[in-house]
Length: 528
Ligand code: G4P
Image 1 (cartoon, rainbow, N blue to C red):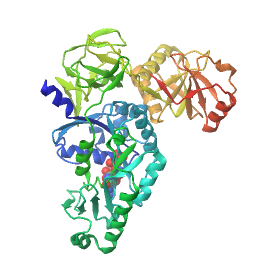
Image 2: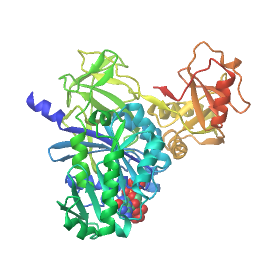
Image 3: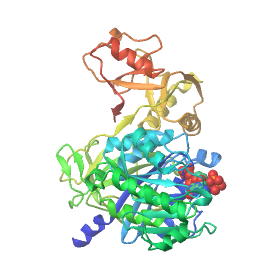
Image 4: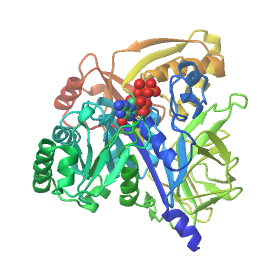
């Protein structure tokens, strides 16, 4: 039993969020390098050429050389077993990226030091806040000209509404980058650029050491002393409880490309994060250390292997131990089953696994029975984990089949793809299924839909873009939506569970609707 406990205790499951190009892939790659999971930095990356090596599951990824889907990377480092949930790096990301955060226990936010908070960081951050998980900040690319670090912190605080605690502080940037000063240890980590190799040298130099002045020069030293003074006086105290609840973000400066500050960051991060935390179910909190297995489905991936046309359901294990061939209970399907072909994603390949523990992610063969958010647990304990939110799409299009004789395949295809969570489908009230409104988080999903309908269901479609950008769920059951006072460019639709929703072209119209319809309550997230 001790073994079982220590297996779970050493697990750390997190996601890395960032705006494209901030350096998420480079940082992930360096992490993997420390864990010995890849032999050479560069094998995760080189996205223009071999990026698809990690997850070349879909033809479209290969064609475009981008990663559409997210995968999971597991490796060991310093006694920890680390699961990194990889979120698609492409600008045009999908709902999958959001959902991946549902399976994480913490998040690392990578920010480009010359750019600060960018659009995609902002969106992903919102989801982290919803989850109440710790968020660590890595301010990257300090080897390039960077913005003033105090400005960067202020921007994070103002734009994202989270307080910051700089664990280390940069000395210069770009050509003048000399390293970082570790505030907790009171020592300097010196930067020496040497072609992407380990570029770090720890010098135990206190703030007032003459050797530090010699190393960085008098002017930089004076500036550093002033800034450290300012931080000690003005920035908030380090409070682990606030970190755990995502109210305070520990901030680290570094340069992933030159491998500077990455290992100290990883070490502090592992130190400050916890093993898997309890998850809330309808029967109360489920203890990850309980001996009974439980998990939920957070992602469904079709067609990873084109030859087999299979579907893989990704499960986040929430408690206990998973063993190959064990019998489990699928709560939503109300039946016992054996999970077949349990797989784990190891950097570059899928491996059949024999066991896995709370905190781990496994992929299992899905014969079409699972939906996102489903609970799978020990047959002796039947409970349901809280649902996964449905994130509001931001792009909409009318979609119909070209050939009306293909109606059946069209309905089957769009419904199945929607069930996987790649797209959301809506209907105008009182219309048939020949034409649906498709909503996606990133426009690339439209291409994926078109491609998959053609290649898997043999259906050609006609797609017409719609001008809507915002979707809100109507929360009141007692409102007759036809009686609502809405601007002429607001559209009422319904989903296939009968929920009623409103499509808006801009935020102004949302406010307009709320002002003119006093009782109306609109939600930004739905439920699976
Ligand atoms: P992403 O996954 O967040 O999209 O970013 P990625 O790691 O792919 O990094 C984006 C670009 O930024 C890459 O350059 C990468 O080499 C560079 N980069 C990442 N970290 C650092 C850093 O600490 N310092 C500097 N100077 N550059 C960094 P690229 O030219 O777009 O790609 P490549 O040609 O190097 O593959």
